[in-house]
Image 1 (tube, rainbow, N blue to C red):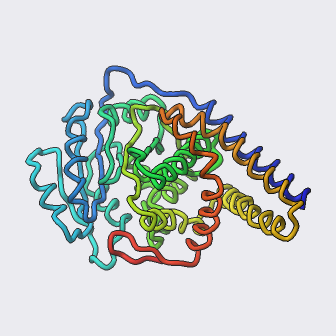
Image 2 (tube, rainbow, N blue to C red):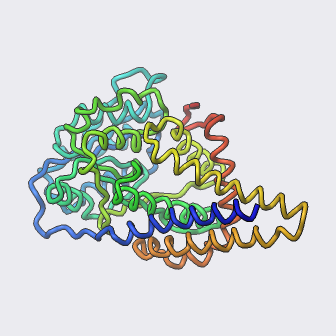
Image 3 (tube, rainbow, N blue to C red):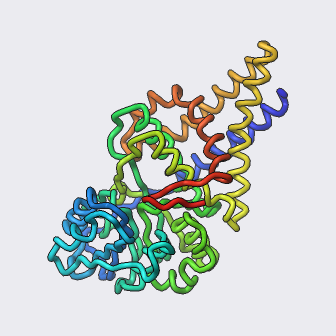
Length: 371
């Protein structure tokens, strides 16, 4: 048992150290004062988003990017509320409302995004969600990065707004860790990771890989699975934009039920990756967390095994904490680190439960129940 524990701790420390190295290696990007002449299409798939879609459109209309160089396409994914009416209330010519070219019972977020891209005119496509809020330089910074670096697909940072409860703090710490791993893995070229709330890619690249063809039957994966398809054609042109000017802000889930539903949805695509690099890492991380239960059981039967459980918790907290603190400084959320050690047991159990349920259960999203 001791040898097993030490081996897992050694490999896990090496993995997190690898992420830490590449996070630090990733240079912060600052866009030049003058914007490039790149036509941009911002596409938002919206389903029952009457409460927040107006706020997002207002924010987009006040971007620093030249207004004649970007359009805003809202895809009304068969909303049953007043989403379409809210979008229609904007008389600005930059804002367009389109609908998925499919039946309501066959629609999905992928179908909605695809409809938006088909209707778009921009060279560069920016994807975000209806409940997000971009920085005022969001479009300009991404367009400048695209032009300067020659990127084809770009992942960018996302953060949660506010930390008003234990649930919100837990989500923020968990999500910040994921964001750090995303940035480091893209920088290292080892995993295809991103978040659909803040993406950008060349419109032609989407068509070159036949869009979501081959992954269209999978409920989730409009972000990472597409990223992997494009990475296979352009491995050197998939990049991460490490800039505070492109941090996308979004609200955390308001209840534990909604939070678990979101994470089950995110985890459900794990078995569909053709990228063995990420599946092997996911499997190892899951087994590493499962070791906690093994050590807990061993301690229950023999209290003298408790020191191995304590070693496990201390080492895991230490190596993750060093990495997460570096990421928190970028997001200016260092104060959250005070709660990090306290959240460890809960986070381990959550990882184990979500990893299991996501492969065998169902989830509901916006009124659609999906396997």
